Length: 266
Image 1 (cartoon, one colour):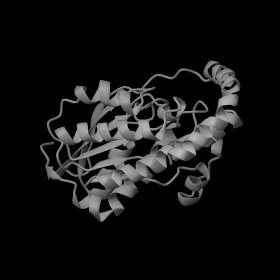
Image 2 (image 1 turned 60 degrees about the vertical axis):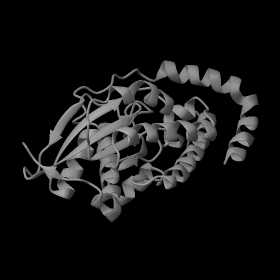
Image 3 (image 1 turned 180 degrees about the vertical axis):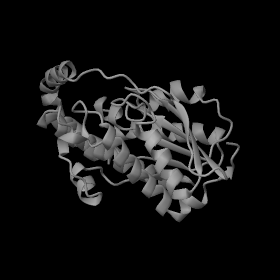
């Protein structure tokens, strides 16, 4: 895997000046959207039991593209899980736009105040690819992140979402889609290897695709409808993505059986 990265990096070196100027133009053309507000909430379906969930990650988990987290990935995931499991889902978001796995471990994990939780969902990878981080560095940073969470939450299931579909970003040039998109695929393959070394740590390895979503969920959408600014998900995309992740969690007996649905105090 590192050989694949190394060869790609060597081929990319002559293209770096072009990518640099293309990146600057993209940065100017893409509007700077704020993160979502309301970092905690509860989706109430049943008052008999409750699932406590933390979501951790980069801009998609931070809800860039929607006004509130209720409208974003975390709120939608909580609703889907609550419906599928017939329980209430209490949730809190720990995320920051622009953060890599290392940033999360260095600057976010120590901010977590919860002493216990029943499910942790992590969305990362885009910024590590944008920074051209190697699979070796990514591997090291992800392992440190998992170890940090395990020191706090001994047996809580940890689910990594699938990697961002950079090859589909409308705002990106073909060159950046190819180079960064291939790197994010490599990092995804690396993550799939990492999680196999841990108990109760999972990765949804399916590469997200607008065409796949349209077909599987019978949607009347165009691929461009999935992105609010050419990069970040639209409100509808957050809902579709959350439904897909919820399906991954709930159809897995291993994950579902490790969820501790405690008595609700709602």
